[in-house]
Length: 614
Image 1 (cartoon, helix red, strand yellow):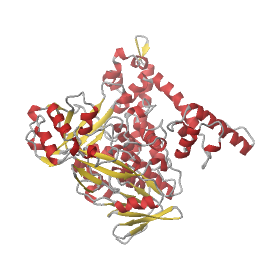
Image 2 (cartoon, helix red, strand yellow):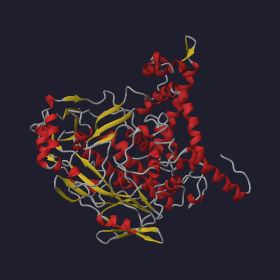
Image 3 (tube, helix red, strand yellow):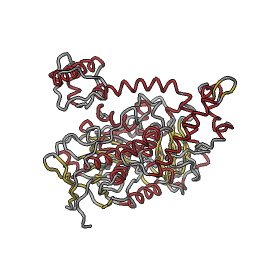
Image 4 (cartoon, helix red, strand yellow):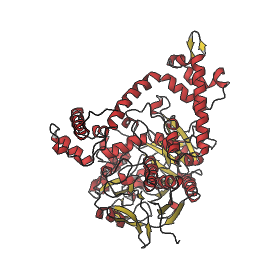
């Protein structure tokens, strides 16, 4: 390949890298994707599942902005479920098992066919800079590429160390090498580098499990698509199965804790508290005599099974004994053992809101390198980083998603303002405005923004306009059609009436031939109209604080009446706005009041007039 100069270089072909390369190339930037192997682009190295609680909302948001993940899931999913269906729409989240081989093939083919995108196989070794600005990237084989923007999406590869019992070896993933030189390059550039840990469970041969002795978990009868471009899912549904650990397994694991790297001192990094290994479970929940294990197919042929719930790095012989003691897996064949991995990451407090590093202009970070965990969190960051890298090169303003706009905005704001002491995972509880940030309305929140920033194509935009027209017409009909003295709109607000659940079947609605998505959107809007109006008032207050910018390099220690602890926290985080400052850990409302008064006085001194809060 003769070309060596690009607008944007993306390093890493995982879920963050795929979305970053797609977004950058989609808005016209000449983009280079450097990956160790084309065959591992978008590889589902852990559970081959997309979505889940809060994660499903992120996938819908990536789709609403024009990303790939939802489309790939709809095309390759083998089981679809809407989680929390019995609860309110704010916490309902789509989830799907995918065929892991077809999923990565779908993403790879989309990238190979993308305009403005070149894919090369290689290992990034050094970020090239001049005067604290990116100039390109050198690969391990000595090849260098020039670009004013580089997006690093390195996953668990930076100085990755694998653990299987007493055995440990360098690696970024099973049978893939670590990337040590790039980690050294980041340190040499002055970035702070930390260490985290994650893990994965054993995989079993699908034809070696006694399914008749297990509980079956089917998918939804009428599965909801992830992508707003799809009206239905026609793919066949494949079940998952449920089994349990038991006291005999727990005793085996307790008796061999000294051989578990997590407790022998071999692993020193912090792992995810919300998704603990089985060795952590038996200690943290010592009163439980069993833990649920989901046996989830990894492909349409059910050739391998992912044992969700027993992530571990115990030695191979202990993993084998554990399976012999568990109902349904007594005779199972192991395809590969569970393992743990420690890897380097860069605390995200070193980033700006556009995911560009503060220290090195043009260097963007996305995914697990920022301390997050999960395909969905990585994809959301990748799309934002790739888009903003390309826009920076073009001299355009970045896309910054607010906390009230998207779960992606909540995630990025959390990463920038709150210290990471374990891999970050998104939960609905992290979003204070989750009633507004539902999975069903991600397109209503973000598709117009995707259009403004060049990500949304004509087909998606046309479908979105049709949906808006249907919502408008349906809303008007419901407000003007009356039954027993009340409008259908008002009747929808009464849960006991049950109209929301059967709205799709009502004669007046059926006659309008509206899409199911439009009907559901209107039903939710009507039922929660009062709550949404109240939340919008809270959001307006947040926006006021976020509109007050904090000058670069503000000396917090020079602000009298500000607590010393607040000065320390604010100096470390360097918030960009007063709203962001209010979300820094350890900062009180009183601290924000002091800071707001100080900024107001400074503006009066600078301009000679009283500033407006708007």
